[in-house]
Structure formats: structure tokens, C-alpha cells
Image 1 (cartoon, rainbow, N blue to C red):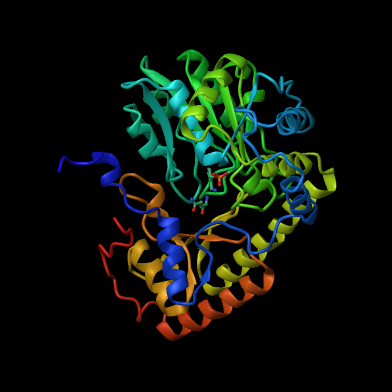
Image 2 (image 1 turned 180 degrees about the vertical axis):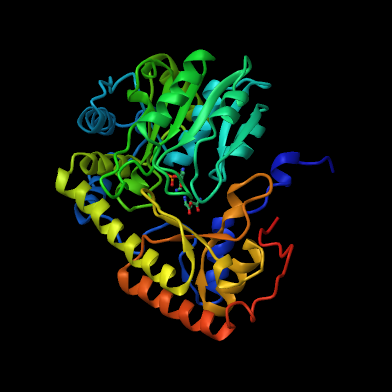
Length: 404
Ligand code: PMP
Ligand code: GLN
């Protein structure tokens, strides 16, 4: 038999699925894959249920139902002062995952270069490669995750077609400042490149930090594709409703990609998300405030246990250094052993780097009920005490956690 696609054949199962399966197998509290352990808002569930029953269950329009496209345009105006035409500048997709692929497909020809910032979300690199484009990786390093200006400037060149930017950033919790975005905007303008902005955590921002879409910076409106996700904004990650906001010329091509990927997205979910985007300011404030409390609970607990907890200003995630505990295992082995022995699951930071990752960091999701976070901390405390600061953990170098 002839070989199947080499890239996909060589791609392992996503770390999120691998770690969730391991958590299940060991009865672990799953602070790995990022999903809330409560339902999203009741009014959205009711709206989706009602929409399911009112006879609009055939193919919706290719670019999304009118209600949702209008709601996305209105949300752009309300939150960021962006004027967006709902008819020609919004494309609804089946999750941000599809939106990322559709935006990359819309822009890239084989051989084009794409600037990516590590640590990076796991679909970015395989998708860029599958399209025959050339990734140019620039690394951020803990603990500061500072933007390396010289490396970024060096990564841009005449073949740069696009930058793929994630802010608020998974897994670092970094929220890019207006100054950092200004620097990136300068490079984009200088090299006449596009920006694909993965902003799925746009409303999950803490401590008075403000999410600034790159699209709002001078000169960026015409070259930016901005991606949102109802999964994150409404704590309904299984719904897989995403939305792209882009200038007309780009949105039309994104719609062509969407047409070939999924064509449409379930209409009842789209209509419920439209209800969600119109929710009052108290909803959005409450969403961020609740998550900030949970972040504080988990961060404080991990810090008391001896982890080196890095600050997080946005997203669902805390990155923590376990080296101060005395554990010598690499991050994949550490997360596996923590799952098996402590029965608490996290994601190894190395899953977000293409090359060698910074040593000994794990990502913990805090989008869980306080009692669940407390229970996880209790388990970790018992484990760390029992393991005697690392004595029970073997330095299982090379322990391969991905199910390649
Ligand atoms: N981008 C980032 C940075 C994410 O963390 C996620 C995870 N959910 C996605 C995209 C995918 O979002 P969706 O579930 O809407 O496809
Ligand atoms: N975005 C989620 C995370 O980072 C996972 C989504 C997925 O499992 N594909 O944990």
C-alpha cells in the first residue's frame, strides 16, 4: 500500500486528549485540558434548546446565521470600538480551531513564511506545515515571557506572509500590552504581512489588564484576521462555535476555506451564541472575576506547596515551575507521575514548544469549581509530603507521554 500523508501519519494524538485519558484512567482531578467543569449560562442553553425545536435545522448560510454575524459585529463595536460589516466581514466557523485553519489556508501559498511565537497552541505548527508554508519560530522564555524584539525582527523577511499571534496567551497567561502589539504592528507594516490573531481568551483577563486586539492599532484593520470562540467566552467548550472578523477582501477567502472544511456550523448553537454576545456587562465582568478568584486559589495553593508559580493575567492557565520541589523528572514524566501517584493532572510545557522546552514547567487549568481545586491541592500536598520532595519521583528522562 502507498504511504498515507506523511505529516499526519507522524502527528501524535494531541496532548490534551492524551492527558485527559490518563486522568480518567487514574481517577485523577483533571487540571490538564482546558475546560470548565460547570455548564455555561442557563439562558444560552435555553436559547439553544428553543432554537433546536423551531424548525431551522437545515443548512444555515455559509458564513453564519445573520443573528450571529450581527452579534459579532456589535461585540466588536461594543468592546473594542471596531466598525465591522456583519454581512461581508464576519465568518462563523466550527470553533476557533477551524477558524485558525481557515485563516491560514486563506492566506498561505506553499513556501510562504509564517512567524509563530513559542510556546504555541498545538494546531498551529502542523497546520502551517500541512499547507506547505514555512514556520519561523520565535521563543518566549519563562519566567518573564518577554517579547524578544531582535529575534522577532530577524524572523520577518520578504517571504513573511503572516504572523499568528495568540493573546491572551495559552499556556503563559500573558496578555500582550499595547506597546508589544505596537512593535509587532511595526513589523507587519514594514513587511506588508498579515496578522492572524487567536483571541479566544479575549474576555478572560484579570487584575485590570485590558485585552487589546491588534486589529485596533493604526494600520492593522486592513491586515488583521481576528478570531473569537464561544467555547471560551461562554464556558461551553463542546459547542465549537468560532468567529472570524476580517476586512471584506480577506473574509471572503476565509469563507471559501470554511466552505471546503465544514461549510456550515450548527444553526441552533449559532443562534444561542448570538444571545450570549449580547449579554450585559455584568456577565462579562462576572466571568473574569470568577476565574480570577479560581486562579488565586490555585496559584496560592501551588505556591504554598513550593511550586514556582508564574503570574497569569489571562486565559484558563497557570504555568508553574516544579524544580523548587526537588523533582528532577522531565516535564512529561512529571505530569504522568503526578497523574498516576497524586491523581492530579497537568500538561507538560514542552507540548507547546517545537524544539527543546524550558525545563520543569507544568500547566495547570484553574477553570474548575473551588472545591475541586481545593481537592487537587490536598492530593498534591499529600503526594509531595509522601514523595519527600522528589524522592518518590524517578528522573524518567525521555518518558514519552504523547501517543504518537
Ligand atoms: N486557540 C487557543 C489558544 C486555544 O487554547 C484553544 C482551545 N480551546 C483554541 C484555539 C480552540 O478553540 P475552539 O475550542 O473554539 O476550537
Ligand atoms: N484549548 C484547550 C487547552 O489548551 C484544549 C482544546 C483541545 O483539547 N483541543 O487545554
